[in-house]
Length: 402
Image 1 (cartoon, rainbow, N blue to C red):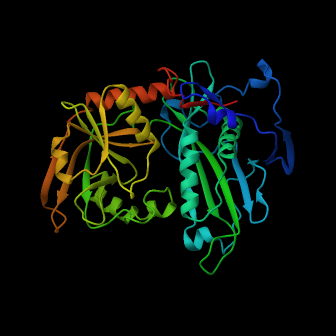
Image 2 (tube, rainbow, N blue to C red):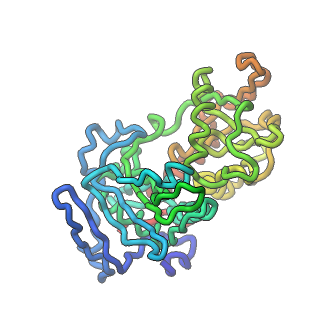
Image 3 (tube, one colour):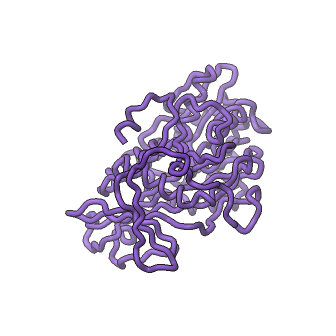
């Protein structure tokens, strides 16, 4: 792990195998089968992890959507006060968990999660995109919710092991799909008074997914500027990936869709005058004449790893990257607007509409590109190219599964 963190940024990373024991529970055996994972000399046999795209997922790989599908296993780890983190366990006998009725996750929302993807390359190797950044963000969420931090190397190796065990479910190269990883950490010990739990469970489930939108990039969609709800308070938990942030968006999201707007755009809770972020994605505005990439800087906005990657790509392409307050009316200056996140990389936004108090009459409408903008497509293609091994990974973002 030390070598991993100290490596130059331009080097392609590989995971370091832990000198620990990983237990594996299967449907055919209720006992734990011990599988030694001690590091061995590198040989063709020891580095082979299997071939991606060989599982039966019930449809053509190109027809995968973004939805839950059963796989070989999920990974589970348990933390207990006084004992620390236990050994990782690969669970393949059941997709269900046995949870205490007094768990703090159920009563007080002590729960956070992450989202990241693994991709097959043309040579059938599999690479996880920027899991080191997810490790850092998960640690930030843990600290905010008074949960035990998952050590960096523990998180990286857990991701490696669950992908390796599900390698057959990684969509094959050229299918447009990926294996989506959802690390979920929650308080699993009982507490009825408001206080942190004494036990925590980390689950990493994996799901083969296709492009969020068929063909990779959707036609621009229309956003509704949300003014009767706030996503997060200025000193709340908007900057961390906690479960409650997303539950709070369910109602505004549904109301917006009923009005014909598939995505919502939140403003700052304090003044309602500055752009914050979309329902589940960061906001990016592109000024092509000035070659500017503009995204909000706010303590209430979740730091998107996709946005961080796109900012680097934009700078590489000669764009000035600005992270700052964005007044709502500045949208008039943007040629292209994107909602960016793990699931889609980018969603092009065709317009952003503000409604009057009656919820029907348009008070302002900001219009952008009618089609997928050239800059949006270029940035999307570069990131997807890096993820699939078709574009040089000069920043060392891909972590090879071994």
